[in-house]
Image 1 (cartoon, rainbow, N blue to C red):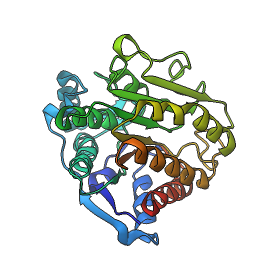
Image 2: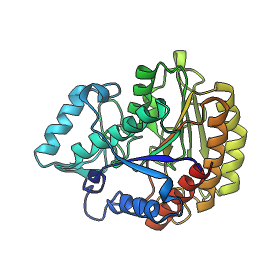
Image 3: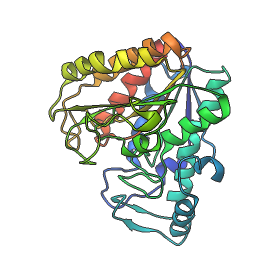
Image 4: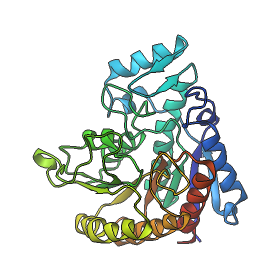
Length: 315
């Protein structure tokens, strides 16, 4: 077994998205309970997720937007239609810790202390764009992480794999013209955000060919997902040869999750982890950092995360 570094902060469970909102604090409690009750829990080191600095956030986001969000939250917050969520006094500090969680993991992993890392980040991030929140997301945690690694560690090739049931439009936009980041998304077709994640969307300029979208049909099961993964994702990553793999892990494709409309079993996430480890071993020195995105049915989320992390640890 190999040790897992997990970056966590209690603010992940304090941000309030609104009454009966599916993106609830209970999600993170379910994940952390799954970790603490797992047979492999002794192989997990839990550390405090640090705060992302203004300069680090500005790697991806407009400082004017970030300042406006800070002021709004400090003033008490409100419902934001583009985010489809409330924000409140704890939301901005939670977002800083969610962005900082990936950076906490990156420093330990890039310095060789660990090979695999995970953060149950909340608010999630892959929908947030340069100057606006979107889809429950305030800051794009995975995009900030990728740019941070590019800048600090002189990395030339990063792969971001996104298997949330929704397309990570914000992450795609951040690296649309960047050949140093290969963005791959396997998501349900014709689901929020409805005009994004098309097969023909492959990047632009120097980034042409460094975005791969794999839209999947509603009701997709494990077999269909894995056929698509083997046919499109594996050869793309092997050909690219990333030096680290970053993962936007959404568990809203689980069969128990009514939001996603897919039919993935908990066991699928074990196979995804197996595939990721093999791909990471090929070029990335086994380095995989995973940040939580969606997953709204608590039992399915806990089972999926538990199976996924357990497989990463078992190696």
